[in-house]
Image 1 (cartoon, rainbow, N blue to C red):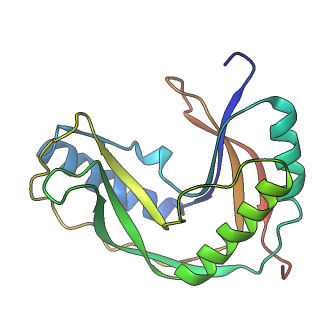
Image 2 (cartoon, rainbow, N blue to C red; image 1 turned 45 degrees about the vertical axis):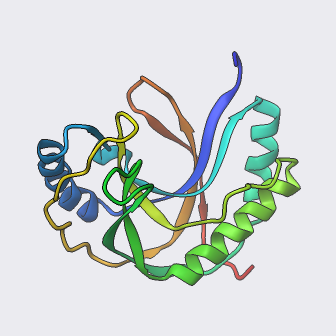
Length: 184
């Protein structure tokens, strides 16, 4: 894997929402220590996971992403959910309550750009969510958790290409931001 860059495309959350989630995540971590709760500065909404790419492939993706158009749009998060069995989920997340169709359309344009850059199609259907936690072990029971905080809706004005640096700080580094100002 030497020389490969683990990367993804995502939306950043506004500072106000990250601050609101910080205390909530700490409370949840106390209630459910069997889950790895996301650090507040690592919270994002993934639009396309790219995986471990050779630098040349990442540059092709970077170039194609610059052609992804779209107008800014409003987005709101609300409602906790899980992936996996109801009592022993693998992932705990917060969902998109407004702007879902526009967010999914943006993810679709990003997917097309990635394929144009030579990446294989993403086999999983896009599901807009912000991951809050992952189970440390399969079959970990999820206890009752406090209700998530009320998060402020915001206008998404850009998306970003991130590098994921496992076991390093900062964990996610923005490689490039792409403004939403043009119609696709």
